[in-house]
Image (tube, helix red, strand yellow):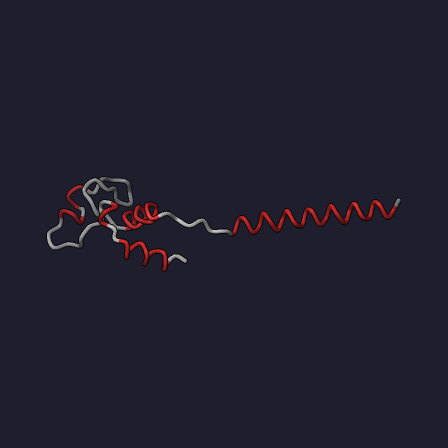
Length: 95
């Protein structure tokens, strides 16, 4: 009877360890972002790119936006403004 209990305990411990390792491995798996999600992230990284954007405090950028500044940086307001190369570069930076 002692042998049966020992086998049961050993099997239980092995099952628990297998489950724990599976859960730990699943938590470290990184889910790849879609191109749309990356484009949205790149647009968000710009500081007040468009008049309708909100700044860090949540206020509308309005005429403070890069879009309204003459000679300023080219703003990324829409997904079509983010090039495929920008998406590829983002993926390389965030590996």
